[in-house]
Length: 203
Image 1 (spheres, one colour):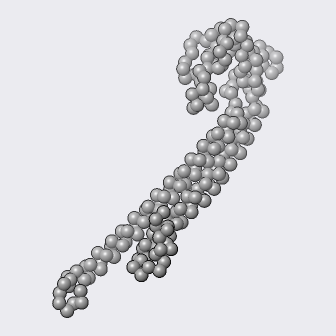
Image 2 (cartoon, one colour; image 1 turned 30 degrees about the horizontal axis):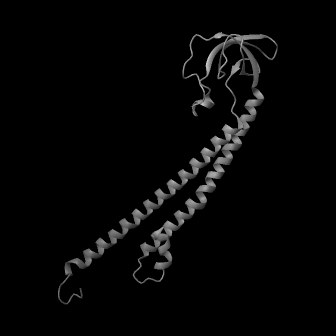
Image 3 (cartoon, helix red, strand yellow; image 1 turned 90 degrees about the vertical axis):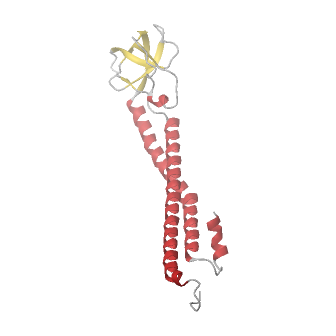
């Protein structure tokens, strides 16, 4: 930020080096990219991600449907890893495995092991499960709010990544400028150094 403010201060400064101006302009460009381009990129990535996920939500809800099932008995074992994929990342409630019976779309009875987050899992309790078009158990579909949260996180991550890459590029450019500055100083000193302090050399 100091380098950016120095553009105006150094414009008419007789001791200002070209590298100082280049460094200031590099900082200004990087600042504009981080303030304008990075948020715009994040918004674009978030918007595209949201569109994709919302299409996935609609497709899943068209393919899957909620079905009422009746608990027959508890399953042989319930693992703490038996969680719905959408709730695992957010530490959702533990899903209990039970043996249940339900009806497929064609009216035939189906029996199988399903997972539920319902607290009522005693035999005879009614629970809701998700099934596909054939009546087979399926994972709960993605909901709209979860999809939007993922999109926001994707956009925010893209904006932060773009800002970080911009700052990294700025630091690399400034480092290269300093290396060239030091190289020129070394060459200049190599030319005048041997005559430093000698009478009549003008040094």
